[in-house]
Structures are given as structure tokens and as C-alpha cells.
Image 1 (tube, each protein chain N blue to C red):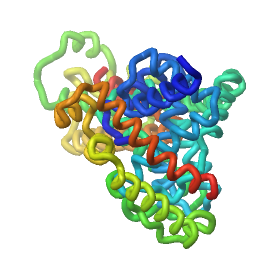
Image 2 (tube, one colour):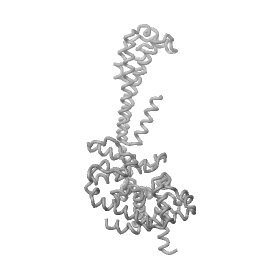
Image 3 (cartoon, rainbow over the protein chains, first blue to last red):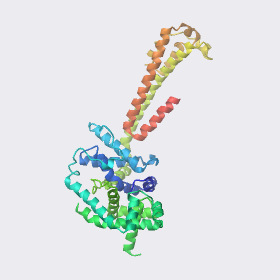
Image 4 (cartoon, rainbow over the protein chains, first blue to last red):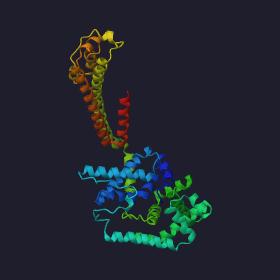
Amino acid sequence: MVDSPDSDQQLVDRVKQGDKRAYDVLVIKYQHRILGLVGGYISDFQEVQDVTQEAFIKAFRALDKFRGDSSFYTWLYRIAVNTAKNHLVSKGRRLPESDIDVHDADFLETATTLRVVDTPERNLYCDQIEQVIHDVIQRLPDELRTAVMLREFDGLSYEEIADVMDCPVGTVRSRIFRAREAIDREIRPLLGRS
Amino acid sequence: MSDKSAREQLKESLSVSLDGQASELELRRVLEGINNDDSLRSLAGRYQLIGDAVRGKTSKYAGVDISRGVMAAIEQEEAAPVRQAQPKDSAVAQSGNFAQRFWASLGKVALAASVAAAVIVGVRTSNLTPEAPLLAEHEPAVLTQPVQLAQTGLRDYGVASVRAGNNAESRDNITPEQLAYAQILANQATRERFRAYALQHAELSAVGGAQSILSFARLTSFDNQ
């Protein structure tokens, strides 16, 4: 799921209306990216989890102030960076010389080895998952592959994909779902072994 | 509709909801499903993982799930608002008391700066203010008095402003050296005022984001008063 403003606004609006379950979905969507971002500032695995949790809680408390000028992820990212930096300051540790850019955060290679996460086995595991997903996508029927790639890689809305593929929006949503289901069938056993 | 079909429908609704394209009814059903069904919750995580992998952003933390901990902490906070509010309130109350003491001191500094500025303006113009006849009744005073009176109350400033030379007689008696000294006082008061603004902002930023923003607004509104 791309972090386009539209894809999260529905959930954000729902949270603002008082439905915390929508925030649960936002956490599920972005927890791994924020963990990776915080992991760029903090080396201890437990602390990374704690600080990430704290960042999400702070974001929840401040959600009324989120006006949608940026994407939800960008706003969340800034909160996570500040939370990580405040954590370092509170522990008397030195701050990094420059902040991690929001666009680079997902590609960050931490300088410090994370004993639990950054192991050769874990790296191989992540590579394997990615490879399986790409292999399955290549084997998908053309219409399913095109729909899911336009959505996940290019970030097009369902309406835009319907225009590109010259089909109804309902067909787009069905194709994207079927593509995801096909991929999920292959990766579920892998994740079960992790 | 068979169970399998209903399940498939819910999964498709989940897929659509994660893309922000669901209807209100669909989203409600999905949220209820995720709340009650661990397998649907796990599926949401896997759909997200698929998207991350397509974009080449598979996280090393794939498989780590802190979402339950986050929601439990939020529930806990909301379930005990009084207990949770107290630490925040204490911090806010402390900052509020600090703010009150601070504003009182700042007011004195600001008034001293105004007094010094008034002295400068007063000696540089030859026009009497409407208050001048009244002020003329008071004796002129040494310009060091505003500095001394900075450590006393606001009321004394009022008297000091009169004594410091806002009347025709004392204006005529003020020397260039006294004028320069008044200028120094005004500049010093202004510098201290800005330092105090920065300190206040930093202090309240440590307490909480929303509070600090509000207090910063108060700072600027105070400036405009």
C-alpha cells in the first residue's frame, strides 16, 4: 500500500470520529517502516520497539492536529524522528549529525549491528520473501499483474487504474485483491516458519 | 451467501480498505473483523508486506508486530484518564505556575524597557503630553531609579516613570550621559526579554508539544499587547 494521502485519509478521518480500530490499521500499515526508521537512530532492539510504540502513541494523541497538509506517513515520520531523538537525549547519547530523510528511511542500512534483527539469517529471510513475491507477480495473469503493479508501484488510484486498463473500478478492485491473494498463498508458509 | 464467500468478501474489503477505497459500510465491517479476528489482522500485515516488497522496501522488522502493544497502551491511557492526566497535569500545572511567575517578572522587565524608552522619547521631543501638567507636579529623579525599581513592584514603576523624567522640568535636566544610560537600559531589557522568550519556549516544549505551541502563541500575543 502506497502512502499516498488518499489511502490513509479515510482511516485518519475514522480515528478522528472516535474509532480507535482505524488507528490499529494505521499501526499495522506503518509499524515496520517506523521500526526501520527508529532503528536508524537506536541500536538496541527492545528500545527500538519501545520508542516506536511511543511514537505511535504520541501520534494518536496528536491526531486532532493533523490537518492533511502532508501525507499521514510523512507526519508520523516526523513524530517518530523527534521521539527517537528525544530518547537519545534522555539517555545522554549523541544525536546523529543529520536527520534521516523521509525518502531514505526505508533504505537505511544501520551502522550498528542489531543483534536480533540485522543477522545474515534475517537478511536472507527478507530477501527470500521479496524474491518469492516478485516471482509470483511475474507468474500472474497479465491483468492481475498490471493492476497490482499500478497500485503498489505506481501509486495510482482505482479510478486511474480503471482509466489505464479501460475497465470498471469494480474490476480493478477485484483484480488487485486476486493478485494479493495469489501472492499471500505463497508467502504465508514462509512467514509461518519465521 | 456461503461462509467462504462471506470470508472472501471480507478479505476483498480489507484489500480495498488498505488502499483507502472502501465504502463506509465496508470499512466498518473490516475494522470490526480486524478487531475480532486474528487471522484477518495477520492478513492485513501480509498485504502491507506485499506492497513493501513490490517497492523494494521489505523491512528487516517484517514479522515484528507491535500493533497490539500500541493499542493496549492507548486503551490503558483512555481507561484511566484521571490517573494518566495527573502526571501530565502536574507537569502542566508546574509549567503554568512557572509561566505565571515568569509573566510577572517579564511584565516588570517589559515595563522597565517601556519606561526607559519613554524617557528617551520624552527628552528627544519638546511637545508636552496631555499628562504633562499632572506629571509636572512630581520631582525629577535620577535615571538609575528604574534599574533599582526593577526589583520592586509594578506600582513603583508607575511612580518611577514619573520620576524618571516624563515632565518638562526633568526633560530639560537630563544630560546626554543620562540619555545614553537610558538607551542601554532599554536595550538590556529587550535582550533579557528575548532570552526569556526563548527559555520559556524551550521549557514548555519539553512539557508537551500542544502546550508549547499554545504558549508560543501567548508570547506573540503578549508582544502585540
